[in-house]
Length: 190
Image (cartoon, rainbow, N blue to C red):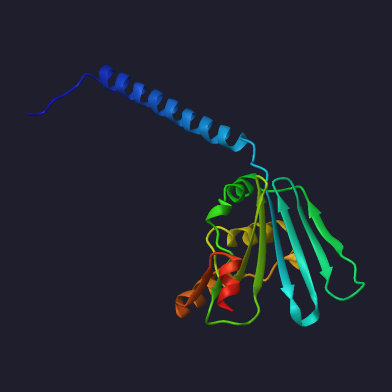
């Protein structure tokens, strides 16, 4: 049996469905905009990128408001110098970093199969607490995106060496990691 509905009823239902869809879409957009306008929780994340072979490091200091890159000479009487600074930051990505729970971080993550010296030292400060974390040829799902964010902001000549795909592949190939929960634990293992 075929049921037919009057066309005025179908148009009326269709009109109400469009109206309901419009209300839902408006609500979703309102939520997205209000979340984007929410203040970013203050934090400071420093990443030291070392080159031991020629005695220097570059410090990338990122906060909820500013990014500064500083050359730090490791030789005696060598002065630090600011290489780059900006306040033009991608707010959504900065908000993502500000949401990292520093209490959940261990102090060292290392891929045991590679010893090429690719070491990034992170210092994360938030709500009066600080945590230092060392990544040694290791992709960390919360901290490593900070490198991607910084590299997306700075000019080419100031980008940190970083190859996410290669890091993940090397970790999968190796399968042996050293994860240290505290520096006290690290010192007792030596």
